[in-house]
Each structure stands twice: as structure tokens, then as C-alpha cells.
Image 1 (cartoon, rainbow, N blue to C red):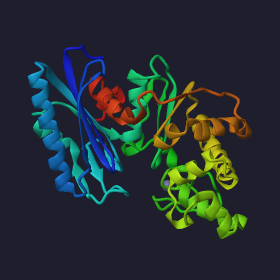
Image 2: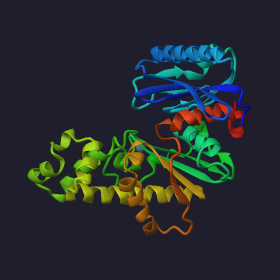
Image 3: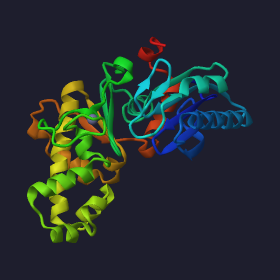
Image 4: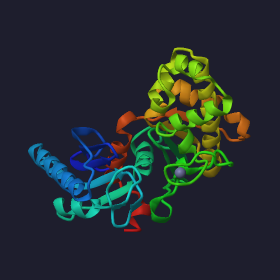
Length: 329
Ligand SMILES: [Zn+2]
């Protein structure tokens, strides 16, 4: 970890929010900026340049020196060039994150990784995963993503897309199509985006009446959000609770696959859906993990940094860039 006098810039480029921060060498956030993510490539690049300049000015005012920038962002990515390539949930084409930031930072190093890979690294360097050699991270939020550190190395994979765990198959019959185009994926069933569509399919298979559904959820099925589902469950409506048991079973299947693949000693779970109701989402799933025959159950902990998970991951990338990533640049 860099000395406390050195500063870094961190960026979290999400489909809705673009967060940026100035942090010190210990990962403490000194100043932060948040804007709505621009929905056009050049506008997003201009936004990044503007935020970077503002943070550089702030660093100068504080008498500090910025050494590097880290970025955790929506994919798919070309991590060598630091380019976002046509993400499924933002109408941009080719966003040159690395080039734009290197220009503003006058050639200082800029490290761009997938958001969940960055968040995993942040937990490993600065959060609950410190001093652990084998760590898996899963975020259950709008989508589902993950990251893994195995034998002390951050897994990157071809083009940086290792640990895309949201696209693990949890329904081999593939009855639901995922946003990526594939069938039967974990994210299509258990993410904030996927859950309402999974519910619609599930209730149609069970033959509930319109009246029963209206009583449980208070609105028509087509307009339900994930928040409505959890609200109904907290009020004790049996259809919602029964549905969340089904979600828990699939979450258990997904988590068991992650554990089997990466053999972590610690599994950290974050993301807005999981942290929004840790008991209903995570603890229910952990209760059923045993059904998937694990002989090495890791410790499981909620994410350390909450909604700052990606931002802290981005700061961690800049504070101590992962060797396996630097070797590729
Ligand atoms: Zn998918």
C-alpha cells in the first residue's frame, strides 16, 4: 500500500451512476463526486475527463500528489486498452476510458477492470479479505457479478472476464432468457432485474389466481419491481415468501458453484439486493447450501464497503495494481 502522502483517483462507472473519488494511500476517501452516467460515448468520455480534472484540482488544493487512477466499470471491456465495448444496459459503443484519463493525468498509470473484479480486489486489499489467500466475491444487485483471488492472485481471464458468475447456469432447462442472450443463467432468476420476470414465470406455473396475486403484491404482475417482492415478503404474504424460498434455492446453487470453482476460504457477498435484505437473500440461501454437497464450506461475510464497493476496488487498483494485471499492460 502506498504511503499516506500519495493520492489516487477512483472511478466507478455504472449504468446509472458515475462515482469518482480522491483517496489517500490507505484507501480513505477524501473527496467524492457523483453524477448520472451519460448515455452517449463521447459525452461519457467528457464527463470522465471533467471529473478527473476536478479531483486533480482538489488534490492540488490539499497539497497532495496524485500517483495513479483506478476504474471499476460495467463491461464488456478490453482491459488492455481500457475500453468499454457496447454494454448491454447502457447505449454506448466504444468508450475510451483509459485514453481519456491518461490524457488528463498526463501519462500517469490508469487501471481499468470489470466492476466486480475491482470490488473483489478492494475487499482483498482494503476490506474483509485482507490476509486471506483465497477469496471469492459475489454481488447480487441489479445484475449478478463476481470476482476471485486464488492463491493470492486476482483472476482476470481472457479479456478480463473471469468470474462472470451471473452467467452460471442454475436452470439447465433454460426456461428464462438472460440479458446476455443465454438461457437459464443465475442473473436471469435472482438479480434485481431478473427477479420480477422469474416471479411472473413462477406464478404462472403454479396457477395462482389474479386475486391472490393482487392481495399479495398490491399491483399487477407486469409492473412489479424487486422492492415490491421484498415488501410483500416482509408483510408475511405467503406467495412472496414461497417465491423467495425458490430464489434462495437458486442462490444456493449459484453460490455452491462459485465455491466449487474457486475454493475460497472466505466468500464475501455484496450488491444492493443482497445487502438490502441480507437475511432474506443471503442467510436463506446459506441455509440451503448443504443441499449442494459441499465438503469445504468457507466463511461467509457481507461486503465491507456497501455501495462504495466498486469505488474502493478502483482505489485499491490504483494504490497497489495487481501484478498479474500490470504484466499484461
Ligand atoms: Zn447471462
